[in-house]
Length: 216
Image: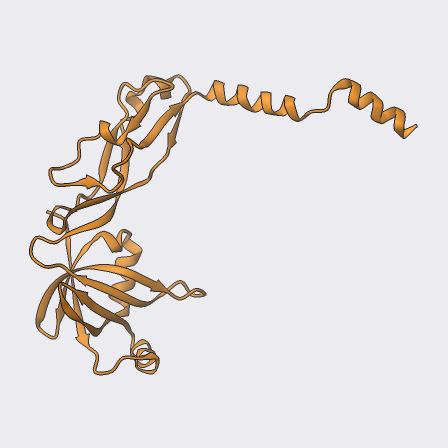
């Protein structure tokens, strides 16, 4: 069961830019509650509480129980707008989650057991292709993380999404290919490639001599 954040909200009598500015001056963040085949509802939430949840990370992947003047609704934050200068929240959309609702969320990928990878022990480098994976699942099944075990991986090995055991009911939104999560790259091979690139960029000896003769 994913963590559920509890947050109090208040209905807004008015919408529009003027009303939103008044809410912000009062230390609140204007918001809209929408979805589940119901009319959008203007609300506001406490600025400090929203900022705290944003700073925790994964705000848009967490379930939020909004207590709107005593009426509790399960939601998930969507479209969090930040001030372009101060980088502080100025508006949040909350999506209502009906019973059995399925949603798309980004789940962080955690790479573990680096010390058990022979390739990394021999000087290879972990090349992380994806730090998050977008999945499709029920709101009650949002995983905290996707864990990739690096044990036994050699230089040149890759881990694809098919190599990971996702919880039942959790599916990646990308279905047309077996995408890569990470690879174990060879440090020696990378150095050789860099040396080859430098050699290709360097002028040949004849070209250098011609340049000197032209200068004369």
